[in-house]
Amino acid sequence: MRRTGILLIFILWITGAGVPSDPHEDKKRVDAELAQTGALLEAVSGQVQQAITRLAEINRELPLARERAAQARGTVAAAETAVVSRQAQAGVARAEWERAAKRYDEA
Image 1: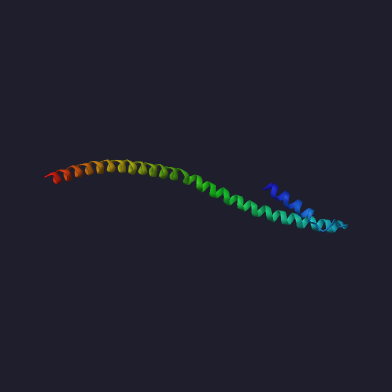
Image 2: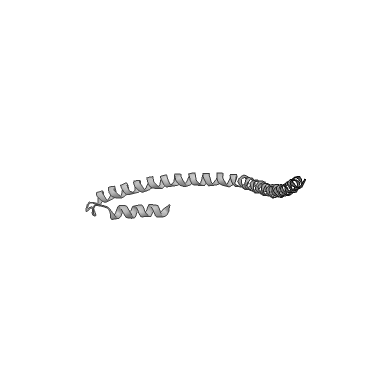
């Protein structure tokens, strides 16, 4: 934020149309630069305040998000376990079917 203001002043100083010889013109130029810098500082300050507010909201929501993520991991683990169990049951059923089919063919 401070760098932005300093950079703006530097850019305005570099891009100025020469050095006025009249001290009143110097004051007008400096006042205009200060007004621009002040406006920029106000805009940036508002953005910073919005960012701080959003960060606080996110930090309040973080514990719930972590809890939901943990629940989701638990649900996935349970589903994976169920898949392994069902695959084992399917293997047993297939073996029984193949034995029954073989007995049928032999009969």
